[in-house]
Image (cartoon, rainbow, N blue to C red; front, side):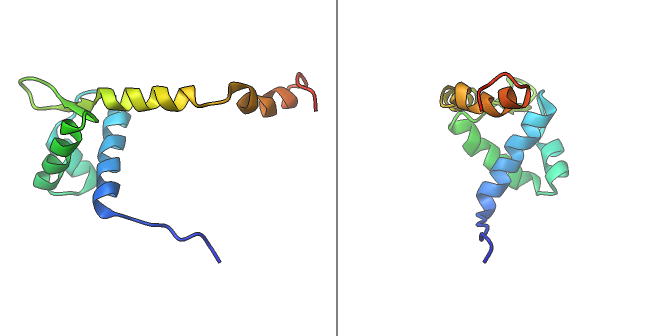
Length: 101
């Protein structure tokens, strides 16, 4: 029996928006996100507003473009701090013949 995948449409869409912003690495307009994800502009706008309220995205003053927000950086730093560098590097070190087997 395989692992069942769960989907919550609104979350899938929100994560897709974050992916687009991350891939672009620059400010992105609602229309561009809408076109890329094949979603209506009003849907993208509403999702962006919720993401903005929660600091996952930020809106540039004046031009209405969006970018990843400070909360993403915070979560990334928490994830990085949780990485056990010693354990994560063991496979690479063994492959290079540096680590004990």
